Length: 362
Image (tube, rainbow, N blue to C red; front, side, top):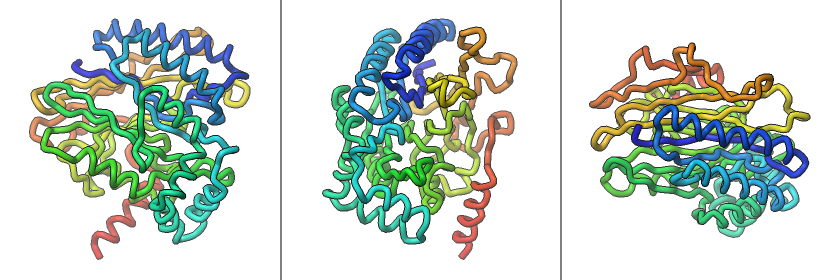
């Protein structure tokens, strides 16, 4: 493999559970190091797709700092990319109008337009950003400067190919009434897409966004899906505490602009508070990519889980989907039926697809 990415999410780190999580995180570091050696993978890049802290507090990010630095050093990571999640919002710093915007988007037809016009105003955008102030301070400590639109881009050169790691923020609008929902926004996605599209060099885009499609504000789900698919080759989510992986076929139906196969979707989860979330098993993903000249030839994805009873990490080698392998056609085109992995289209997505088709035929 020419490129290796570790995908982790939803740490929920805080001082009250530090002893418990330290134990699990230490075993995670040991397992990752051994597994990378066994799979003969190169030094990895690391992607953390949100909910790094539990309540967006400064003292929690001190714990995140220690873990991230330790993990990066242990694995000799080439880079670490972050995105913010709903747990990275500090409720005490929220702008008074933040919850009103989310409630309006969920409850009123004109709510999305109102959120976009608010985001377009610099003073209001800075007020929204302040609600995640400790998170952005954490980013700055790690040498990351985000754009005015609250996203940032990291570029890596691999085999004459420009590989873009795109970090989007889906948590800057937050309401306790609808705390499951997130919103990325057209201005943020449009600016990110424009930046990664500049130049003529071939590119491969890996997008981090904490909220998966089903957690995006319903009124904006269709547009968010179409926009993300138009420039993303791999999309990494968190939030749902799920190891779900799929090759997304509906991207082609929704008018995907990029050539080649539709994107691979990966949801990951790692550490939880056992007292509040005892049923979810910790896990992580490894993504390996092989390049051929100026294109991606194949992609493999391993989903690793933690066995609580045995106290060890594993992946089920008996399953045909582990590792999942996507073979990229040399001249673009669709994937074969052999590459179909994971759930493809939910009932909610079918409804969205039907609406999109109806609009397209008008």
